[in-house]
Image (cartoon, rainbow, N blue to C red):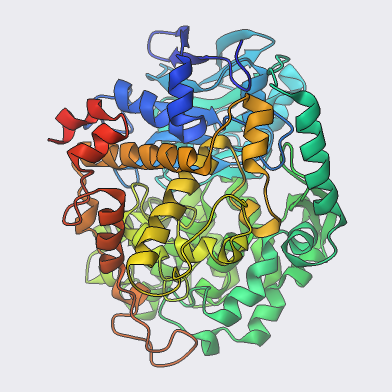
Length: 624
């Protein structure tokens, strides 16, 4: 058996009740690593073009990173993959916890599921036996209740679960693991719901081979020793406050969008931010926890008596901003309540916050009335009203049915010029990072094959961490002029993008670039036994990105025609606040990026010679 991977995946067809193992050649791992790299090749080759993502023929995949399952620090990620029902593009959603490692412990490098069960089912892979099991008694339960029932039934299992929103095919629905970890974006909860699939339940005892276990232990101990002894900086903040440590600083700087992206810090000043700060949230902490192989421990269990929550989970920055500054809500207790509601229902908090903000602006303008909103007075900052609206969205009742698929689809149904208030990219509600602050996020929000995602590669986002000093991975360097407009900045976008797709597919946490220099090449050699260079990883990442792009083009989506809302990019420019006078040339960034990637800058098609150079010759006929 090779090191770090097993050379096989599991195919499950819910329509035919068949379960098959399929071997994967070693060269495919060398070309695509794991995670959504490996998934992109397998799904591209096995999903017919233009397949309805909510049809039985659609494929959904669960793929751990190549290093996931080893003790390599911060490599506990897995990705849910397939065609997004929300955007109609390639979709992937990255999640932490222990589920990815459990896929490896079951002896697989990925699980692919297609078909539709005739009644509610769950899939179990326990101690080497894969089964399709009855889930009638689980259907209708929230994710917490389902997780408890599955652990009563099977004991000490790791499960990926949908709640009521996935069952109701909400395009904002997600997949929840460990009652808190969310594969939140792309709408994959609806894909599971469309298949009558309630959960994927795992328990394994298979060990992966390690090329040099002594070296791996040595490198890991050294990294973790530095991480746990740090008393300042990002590691300390993430450990003590989780991602909520960003709540105040992002609000002050102009990073957090305010009042459905049209507000300025005066609308949500420091007085308001301080009420939902990381310090305020931290007052309710019971204990920390973290993902598999992570020493940072940014997760936490909370107890919030004011919300009648005996045990809940810490809300992350995106959730706090989506239900905070975006809707002018300064009630910290509401953040816990809404986070808990969405986790239990299996809803993406970013999308729900964006949808509520859209509805609030409609109410402010008199387009949605109190009667339209089932008697709810949806004024800015009215936290009680927000809870009522979210409860209706979960159940798809009344106004909740109209809003349940996100801001774009809500605006399409309501009309009356409200598309202006629907802040999204191709259906995906935008995250809580302003492109006028992180400029190159404009390019990724609009034009990445998974549009509207802050975790897609962005030069400015990456360069806010160790990369700005070329200290993230010591062998990886950005050009000196990456901050200035021009050729070196476009080259830096290409480098960050390509590197990002490799580290994602290896299973690394997105936030590794914040903490300390990461011994990436040494870890790959210790775990897998490969001597790779940064140039090797850049080529692999470029290959993965080109294939994600080709998938989206093959679906008939020309990303180059996409446009972001004017208020997002500063068109017209804001007249006040930290983003005053800024307009982001995201289209110009895309053209420069495409030229560096070897893509046609007019339409985003990877050029034939680029595809051939990246060993993607099988894509040429599909695109040309």
